[in-house]
Structures are given as structure tokens and as C-alpha cells.
Amino acid sequence: MTTFEPGFLWGAATSSYQIEGAVAEDGRGPSIWDIFCATPGKVDNGDTGDVAADHYHRYPEDVAIMRELGLGAYRFSVAWPRIQPLGTGKADQRGLDFYSKLVDTLLDNGIQPWPTLYHWDLPQPLEDAGGWPERDTALRFAEYAQIVHEALADRVTHWTTLNEPWCSAFLGYATGRHAPGRQDPAASIRAAHHLLLGHGLAARAMPDARVGITLNLTHVTAGSATEADLDAARRIDGMQNRLFLDPVLLAEYPDDVLRDLEPITGLDHVQDGDLKTIAAPIDFLGVNYYSPMLVGHGASPSPSAYVGSEHVRHLDGGRPRTSIGWEIDAGGLSDLLLRLDRDYPAIPLYITENGAAFDDETHDAGRVAYLDGHVRACAEAVAKGVALKGYFAWSLLDNFEWSFGYAQRFGLVHVDYDTQRRTPKDSARWYADVIARGGL
Ligand code: BGC
View 1 (cartoon, helix red, strand yellow):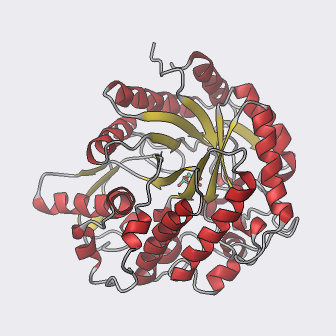
View 2 (spheres, protein in one colour):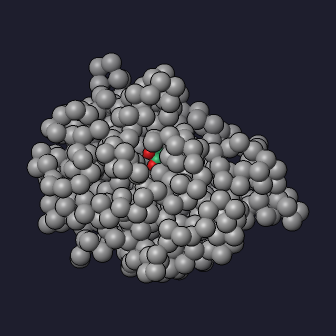
View 3 (cartoon, rainbow, N blue to C red):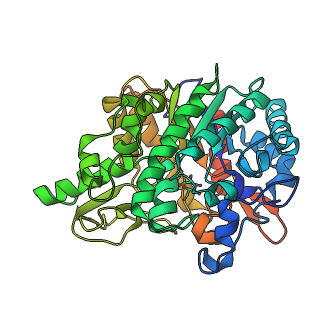
């Protein structure tokens, strides 16, 4: 039997735009995702988050499900356009009240609330003013963070600033696969910096909070030991992992990545003192892991290779894939955790997302196998001394899977979008059992 320490935190995660719906209620303003979804051809099947899983109205039922599962914590995100519809100025009390009621309901049920302040739903007016490529957006984000923190700090201890700034910067501003759908590599690099700056400023704006950031990290391997393939792996590791980890945890940008980026943009947008701000002390690092990456030298149009794609090609590792097409490799997760422990020691880690898309309805053997393998990989890393303190499954509910719309289902709980009926899948029962036993 594989067990974790009694204090190990077991949770599940969601995000605002993916589950809430109610996009025009209680003063919520439009976000970049509302506009993106309304643009023909951007999201599969023309799907939108207008209704999603209707969590805005059904949160008491959803918290009851969490309680049945025995969750110790619930990671959700706060929709910035509910708090500041224009992205600036006075808060709309109705938006704050929604999250306040959610937090109270969680606490009444013995579940720790773990809010993330930004899971991609930027108020559209801030995008109209230039979005994340503009420095001002980082300043606005810190103000917003302060507002939410003041409203909930009496009940919330753990705060995550950003979810996956890699996606916001590069899928949002370089490949255009995500909102706001721009294709401007130089802007995407500025966006990455301003997201990180926003993180640091927000961390400072939340005194006494336990603060973290969630990054989508991956284990990168070269297809062969040739110099060219090793260099492709270095590039991807640089863009995907170190471009975010190094400034936050070591107060510096990696030199080799800056060299790779030089042909696209210089560093005029980085001001003195920014790196110190970005490296504001944090209390934990959130790790989202889904799939490993095997890369080689060559050109590929793949999103992850958006900048410098003339140098990197994604290779097929020959492993089974989930329905979204991502290769399954739990070993990549233990390798990643060991690497983080080696290169960035002393920062407590949480898996803030891990999960799988499968087409099956409620008998989801594929998802159970995926989660089982990855929880074992966590146990293996813990046994080797990694300071992993918790695990959040993605996702509590089936939800709006960004540019894939509703076609890809990641939930432990099935959602029938016609009736909004929730049905726990086999994976939910499996997870409840893991939580009850404290392991496998
Ligand atoms: C994101 C989630 C998303 C999941 C599966 C992560 O990149 O944080 O919002 O649903 O992966 O794609």
C-alpha cells in the first residue's frame, strides 16, 4: 500500500470561465474569453462559456459533491470581470459576495478554499488597452489582487496569483489558439514578463497571505543524444519551464533563453528592479502536469514551439494518448518533481492540476488508470525526499475546455450539459477511496 503523510492535502480544481456560466449576471463585464468565443472559428463547435456547468447557480450542490468525495481543499479561480468589470476601479460588491458565499460554504463543509486570482479571464477593456504586453496590466492586476485579498483574507489562507502564465502569454499572444487570439511573438514575450511582474506585485499586495504561483511544467527529453536534438530540448525546457521558474525562484532570466529570444525582441520592457519584484518570496509552487515532451531538431508548427519553431519538432514517444491527444507518462511527473527539488530546493510543491480527457461517460477506466499512475508517481517522488504537500485533480467537473469547447471532458464528475445533471464517474469513487485511505 502506498500512503502519504496524514497532512497531505487532497483536492480538486476548476476555473471560473470553465464552469461558472452566468456571464452577464450581477454586473460581470466581458472577458477576453467571451469575445474570443464569439468570434467564428476560434472555438470548436462555436461553444462558449455562457452557461458552462452553471456553477454560479449550482455551487451549493457542487460543494456537497466535494464533501462526499472527502476533498480537503478546492482550487477555484476568481473571475476578475466579476470584481472589476472594467478591469480598474471600485469593486462590484456582487462579485465579491459570490466568492465570499462560496468560501463560506466550503468552510462549513470542512474544505479549504484555494483561490487562484487569474485563470485567463482578463477583463476585455484591459485587452482593449493593450492587454498583458502592456506594463499597466500588471499594475491593474496587483490592485485587483489586493481587493479580493481584503475581502477574503479573514477566511482564505492560501492564494495563487496566476494559473499557467505560459499559456496566457504564448497561446494568447503568439499562436493565437487562446484568447485574445493575437499572433505577435514579440508581444507574447512582453506579456510573459508582465504576467510575472503582476505575480510579484500581487504577492506584495497581499500581506500575511501564503502565496504561490501555478506553472504548467513538463519533463522534456531529447529524441537522441545528437547535439542538435539536445539543443532542441534545451530550448523547449527554457521556454516552458525555466523562463518562468528562474525569475520567480532565482530572481533571474536564464541567459540561454534570452539569447534564443533576442532575434524576436530585446529587453527594453524589463525595468530595473522588476526581477526583484518578480522574485518576491512565495510559500509554495503549484505544478500543473499532464504530459511529457519528446523533442528533436527540425521545424514544427506546434504551439509549444511557437517561438523558434524553426528549431524544434515534437516527436511521438509511442505511448498511449488521452482523447485530447496527449501522451500518458506518469514517470514524467516523478522526473519533473525530482528535477524541481534539485534545481529549486526548499520551495514546497503542490500538484495544482493533473488529469486526463477521455470520451467515456461515467465508467472511466482510462481516467482511473491515469490518475492512479500519477498519484503513484507523486508517492515515488515523496519517497525520494521531494517536498510535495498536496495533489489537486483536474477537474472536479466536466467543463469548457477552452478552444476544444465541451468536446473534451476532464471531470471526475460527469455533467450533462442539457440538464446540468451531475453524475460522479468511477474516477470520483476511486478518488474518494484514495482520500479516505490517505493513499493507494
Ligand atoms: C489549464 C486548465 C485546462 C487543463 C486541460 C490546464 O492547462 O489550467 O484550464 O482545462 O489544462 O487542458
